[in-house]
Image (cartoon, rainbow, N blue to C red; front, side, top):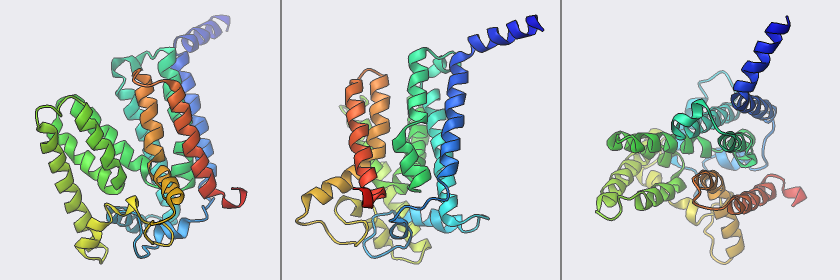
Length: 290
């Protein structure tokens, strides 16, 4: 018995980092499961396709498809976001190269922070917004791109941007700063992504009974329209700024973690980004306490 205990302790010590990551995953899934039955105050505005909504047409195609599952559509969307959170963690680990097989302490902390990120928790399991679904697809595109499969990488990149159009900014930023911006190829890839994005959104709009122009408009309305009343921001600059942080907060929070892990920015920037994002999320999710 003592020999067995010794072997178990030796195995646990050898795989301590992996066990810590698995424990964090278990805690994250437990917390997300508890948020399934909680509805945000603005849930109706996200699902009702009111005039000048800011969701993409492909997002509403997903909502309609969720109705064929034996769950409430809102719960199905939340579970899809939870699965996407798991995909984000997996692709982040794969992006670390071979070090994920024997992660260092800092790599383990990096993955645990992503797993337990409150921004990911609030935006997906609590809010049922498709940020993590789109970001998971963009990470898949990044892995394909980094391995030289650039044409294949365009497929998940276009799908991710079509689900959540503001992530087109991440694609543009990566193409410009990844080293292919100087020889003109970045514009070729961007044109391909944009063409595919507009095609998918147009077809998605037709599939849900709207015009293809409405699908294309859904690509840009997040930039300037109120998500609840569908009116154009004109004079209230603060409300517009808060909405931009709301829409881009998840992507900014996760990208800041990725950049900090690569040493591109300081962890102070990561902390400030998360704090700003969470303050805006809290204001919108819990308006009575704001």
